[in-house]
Image 1 (tube, rainbow, N blue to C red):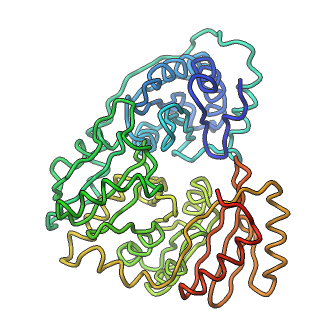
Image 2 (image 1 turned 180 degrees about the horizontal axis):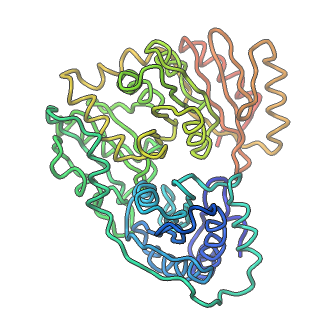
Image 3 (image 1 turned 135 degrees about the horizontal axis):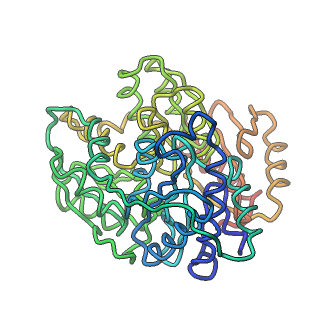
Length: 456
């Protein structure tokens, strides 16, 4: 079994060379043992405590992998509740609604069609990442010699659609104006879930790539600007109020304004700050450390407490729980909500956008314009062999700034700042710079680029 498929936050690899039925069985067995071990004594007697939710996305090999995964879980003595072909956030809802000890979604998220994988969650839909159990699952799975075992668990199929819709739509305000929205489902799970949830919402949908047969017109990665080109043209052509592009498993989205301009997810976080802090005054708001200065400024301005956190959904979700924050946003398009079990949801994010925009006649670009007050490089990757040595070099070069090492190295000056952090899986350093003027941004980018070398 290829141990390289175990990443920082999930399991992912190429089918069938790395991810196949054998690997799925072993991962199911290992996950079954691990997730049941999380149960405390008083939980063991609850109805579904010994059960694990399973589900899949629309990839062609997902049914095969789900079947093997289920068999492995059963062999570990755990029961299975199969909730079908769903978006990943529906898994987080199911775990909490059904009271299972965890859940596993078969998906490769935004990766191309040849990939597949597994996203594992524990009690309460807490993420299982490298530091919270994935290393234990890897150890058990890679030590298994064969994929044979007595099937001691049961399998039950359960339809969550209506209950899930009720959960998502409970966040929608009444008496909103109808808005016209172009939605690119990226041939992923949003193509199934959006019509189900928003069929009677105050929204005229212009659908793009809603077919979900396991093939992709463009890669299901909305962070790549080239994947947004059709959506942007459609927004302008159809005179839409805004547009969104979902990733493959519909837990993330990117938003485009009515002019066809991409809204950075840190600006989207900042846009939502007054809306959420009106609901929960003085609450904390969590954001990842690549985010613009504007996020913390808006949180403070609206009476909240900004909490800056390292990159990655496991860290954001833990920070949200620890601070009991009302919501959180990540530059990757994940948005997390206290009232959604501290988990992320693309569908609930869309609901909140409908609430914000449906309550005003102001255009999206006008709402976002005051937040575009700094100049950002976006994330730029550099191929670097000795990542730690290069980060040490940066810290030494810019030692006059305020330095922290929460995630890589961050250096703050009054007029500009940068973060440089290592990739978990590749020989890359990821650089983000922000400055108060475009000239200063270009100057510092050229300066640091000379130190880091080849862009990827």
